[in-house]
Image (cartoon, rainbow over all chains, first blue to last red; front, side, top):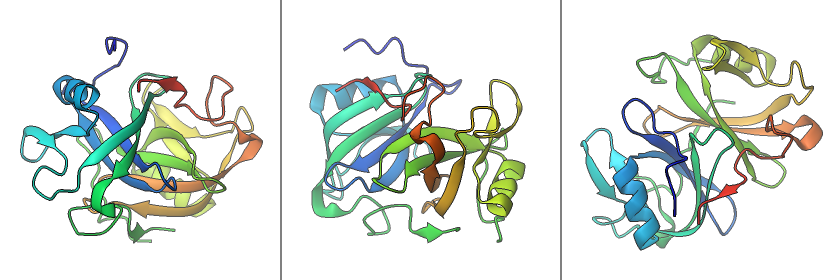
Length: 106
Length: 106
């Protein structure tokens, strides 16, 4: 897979929207650098760059809540990724909730 | 609405995932600054900060493809927004496609 078209920002990151493939629930937004994207494409499991820990992050390596890639897309500007995943354990958020988007604004 | 909890990045921006409320399709990812978020909350239509044009952007003001807010959430880290919208015209992307995520990676 040629990922040279993708635009990483000045920190070398691209945002990835993660959506549950079974019902379309948006689970989280995280960031990938080139290495985590390559590992994701190779392993078909989601890898990110943890901005807080400043390290590669194989999602679920500790918790078991691995995300298996079903489909991945990039957007018209090539600066964002959408991944449809099978969320093992049905929990994506570190709080134990299914989705990180549980705080309502509107 | 108190938006003081939200974390804007060093450029004053927060990413907003936009999802069609009718079937959960992810339409686009765009960025809001504080002013565009306030306008979104006031008008219940999506406003962004255009990073390329460096100006406030009332989505659909030119094309007619306005996005009416149904629900909005922020995530566990308070550094990303999810908006569920009614997409007028059923087209979100400037290319004329419904969603910006039409380029397949996997």
